[in-house]
Image 1: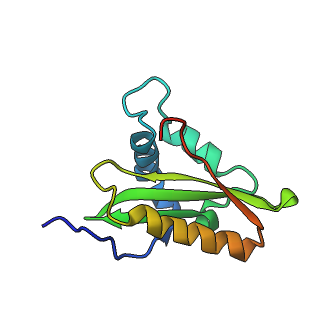
Image 2: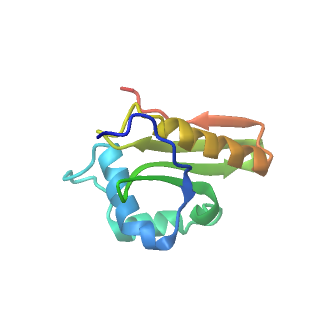
Length: 125
């Protein structure tokens, strides 16, 4: 039976999630199998940038033992905002997963003291 309403809380990223997280980002962004797809080493380099802190700012949703959604909060506190980027894997959309991830991102933005949260949305969404 397919779970219609996602009831699990989002959890924080751990470095042992890196490979599956990279796969998920590529899937959500439609890059799987494309020349521009992110590699795991590139994703690690990106996440290790100063200020990124994925263990505090990257939220993951799991279903059936797999990562199915993410929301990464990029703080820009010098201008009082955070930018949130993320998405949910096809086949898992419209179940409340994105809402749970957005709730976690909003709580993080509040904890950081950001007054504004911008959400990165692809032009075709």
